[in-house]
Image (cartoon, rainbow, N blue to C red; front, side, top):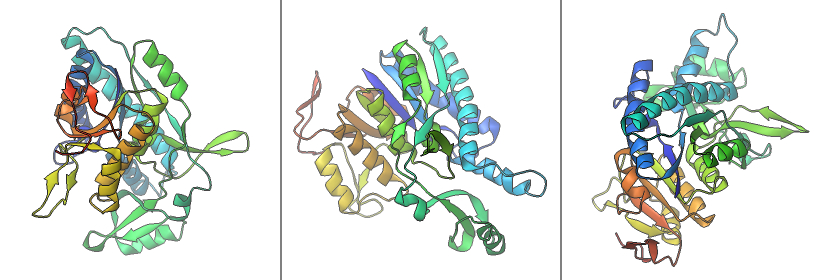
Length: 328
C-alpha cells in the first residue's frame, strides 16, 4: 500500500505557532514519529508538507532588509523552504526509523509544479502570505506592483495568486526513488510554481495550495491512499454552530454536496475537502482527513477521521466493511 502523507503547518511549528528554528525542528521531530510508525507498519510512504510559516519568515526578512539587499521572489522562497524543511524532515525521520529498527533510506526532492500562465487565479490574487503591515507601508508596496488587502485591526496583508496545479514536473524522480524503496519528501508548499514560457520553465510569483498539489502528486505516484494530516480529527458539518458534527466515512458525492452547501471554509478545510475528492475521483482507494497522531490507523482504513471513499464502494479494506451511505 502506497500512502502519501500531506503534513499541515501544525507539523512544522510549535503549538503556539512559533516558527523559530528550534520550534520547527522540535515540531518536525514529533511529526516524524507518526510517519515512522506508518512506515514500520509496512506502508510504502511518501511525504509532502506545507511551508506557510517558513515563507512568511523569508518575506519578513525581505521587508527588514529591503534597504540593503534585493528581495527574494516567492518561487525562490518556495525552493529555499523545501530545502530547509526537507533537510530537517530527513534527519528526524532517519532517527525515528532507526529507533524502530526499520532499515529504510530517505530522500528529499526539490519539486516544481506546473501551473497555467492564463490561470484565472493570476488575475485575482487571494492567497494571504507573510505578516501584517500598516496601511501606509502596504500602499507603498502596492505602488511597486504588489497586491495587499485590508484585514481590519491587524493591518494589511499581502495576497498573491493561487493557481491550480497542473503537473508535478519532478514526479518521475520522486517515483523512481519511491520505487527503489526510499521514503521521499517532495512537493513542499505545493511545489515551486512554474509556467511554460516557450520551451523553458519559468518561476512565478504565486503560492499553490499544498493540499490540491498533494492530491495531484498522490495520483501521479500511484498512491492508494492520501492522508491529509492536520490539527483536527475530522472535517465538521455546521462548524461553529450548536449542530456541529464530525464527518466519518463519506462518499465523494456526499462530500461534494456538503461542500456546495457551504460547510467548509475556503481558507482552511475547503481545500482539504476538494483535494480528497479529486484524489478519490482520480482512482484513489480512499482519502483521509485526520490529526497527525492518527495517520497510521487512518491509512489502514480504521474509522479515525473523515474517510472519503468512491461512490458505491462497499469494502475499503478486507477486514472492514464501510457503508456507502456516508453515515458517521
